[in-house]
Length: 292
Image (tube, rainbow, N blue to C red; front, side):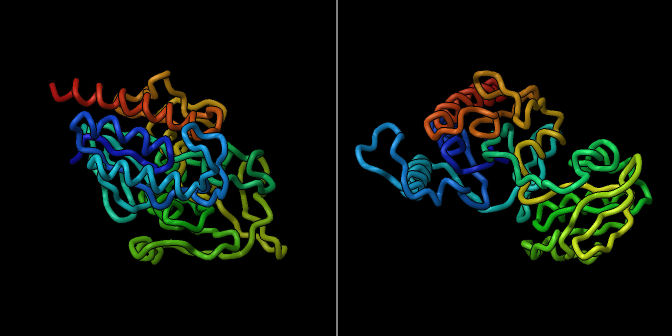
């Protein structure tokens, strides 16, 4: 059990970690990787650097600063968050319990622009197994995805049905050993997908080779879990594909904060760092009040 878990180690996440750790709270940053900014070769508009700096240099420096202040780090892909009196941040390699959580995972996960997805949202297309799995009891369902996140979503559906197919859309699976164990309970279809078909509701997944497979519903879990994925499951308010926050980064769920690109803000490093600072100070105040 730690005081604060921060999901994401980009500028917003690292900035947010500095305030609780300097306030004597145990602080853990969990992320699988740095994200796209790490590969940026030229940054010219960030305050304090007279010469161009790379994304790698900037982010490596941020991590070094956080570690110097005693922020802990764990390399893991987070697939879910639950609450049972404390927050359970569920990764593929372990579960991290905390009094408060900051979401700093950047932009929403990769979107699928397949025929029929928008048309069937709410009519057999779902983005949350926890929210909607109950409606598919004993039905044949599909999960579109190829990562640990997709396997985790499929594993939650096993409570309601054993007839689950993971559709990778032609992608190779990118999963850890724990997911491979769960995969034994699923069917896997590697064909590239052309679209989703049906009448009033989803009836089939259509493939580019002209074939199709019948399903009663489809869950989208493509790429990595995003802040929106967590928000849907936790009941966090969202708007225009972004997490709704107050000016201090707090959401409508006590103890759950968000900062950076996932809040729909102006996508600049300086803004992410500023939002991280606000969320970090707010989480420090929140946990200190809980401890009193």
